[in-house]
Length: 181
Figure 1 (spheres, rainbow, N blue to C red):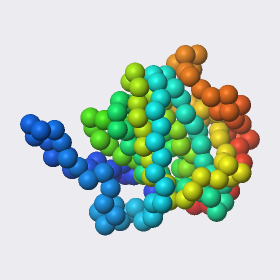
Figure 2 (tube, rainbow, N blue to C red):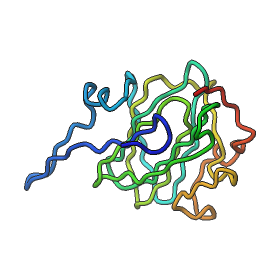
Figure 3 (cartoon, helix red, strand yellow):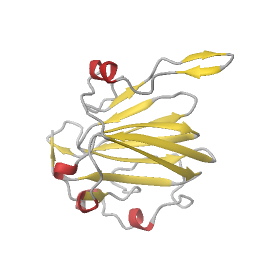
Figure 4 (tube, rainbow, N blue to C red):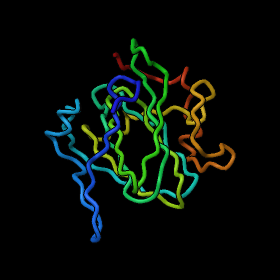
């Protein structure tokens, strides 16, 4: 499903529920390619966070840029992606969607986007596939409560649990970016 930001897609897998529980394909390369996702994922990551945690906005520069396919295994998050691609008609715009264990929605975030999420439930287990490995030297961040971006994290900024690194991240206008649309 389109989001209004080119390349950023919501995936709603077909879930089979019955009295035993549920089953769904959380990833199937051919089906995702048909949806326009051509990334070759090489790394899976998982995090657990408590209510009110805000992680992000993170991205990697240059040859270490990453496309991500994200989803929630337990709990609920408000997931956000910001378009950092110079020349994009949606440069500097953000999109957010609730991902949770019940709706099983996924968000595909192409290279050239910053990514973050806030935790809406008591805890959340968040998982994501990446098409490139993590590189500390290429890692960059934008302050999650940047007033120009004005992201509604669904969490009060005064109560948000944010890492020191993210609190010290530059504002959007000062952030280093090298992406082209």
